[in-house]
Image (cartoon, rainbow, N blue to C red; front, side):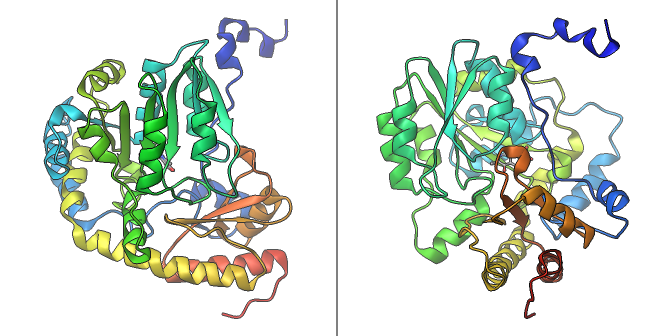
Length: 378
Ligand SMILES: Cc1ncc(COP(=O)(O)O)c(C=O)c1O
């Protein structure tokens, strides 16, 4: 027996089929590969860094790093409940919202059961579902958007979970509150609908501007429906590296998720930072305004280069490059900008770029123009 064949028979069948998650490339790795200084516009992070108030809170909390954290992140949970008009037992805090996706799948799915989502949506839905032994049904999109009617049609007696990313990652599209309610009214009570609002702050900002009624997701939790709403501190609050996310949902189900959660998984430093970040309205305002201007700039320049970027409701832009996206992302990286080829997500001709600072956005457009030999007017 060859060494590489020796152990895999010990891994259950459904786990052997799992592909790895391909994250945005870390800056150091990209610089080593490309031999140039790089900026990262690949993981929808906040280009201004963490909230300054959060940084100060981290510093204080770090002084007590010899102590285990509060296992329930009680202070943060209470704050989140109070600010959103819910009870603390309707909130669960975890080390990132991807962890919640995993806990939901492990709690509600099993071999012979399935989850339903859209094609071209967040790759973690597939990984979490398969890791739990379930099957993921991916429903074709309408254009670049979720087709909620087709998703409701795809639900069958073995479906226990529906994942809805709103806005969607990677296409950046959104469905409104009326469409969500229509969808929930069609789906049986035996199906938990996960409304993943990782980009909630950006979408809320755009929705006000564009006069769209974006989300009433917490109303469904208040009504006691089988709905779990996910949010995160990784995006607008700039705390991706600390890992804090949370979910709102029915206490009974959250209590089951809680049992699977690793003890002490949310550090005291992360909890303190998240609490402080909630109050840092100035950092959020600056982030949302920059995003707004960055989206306008990038969309205009991309169009000028002959692309058709999908109108976004988040802090990233999706565009089809009409060819090998992985090869193009590599050439853009050689110019010092890391973007995300969506080839590992099964979308071989699209790129997703995160909105950066004005300087970063200019660098990306220049790098793209150079990588494709297209002229650009700055
Ligand atoms: C749709 C969606 N959900 C969840 C997450 C995960 O966020 P977290 O950093 O809280 O795990 C992301 C991050 O990219 C995302 O795009």
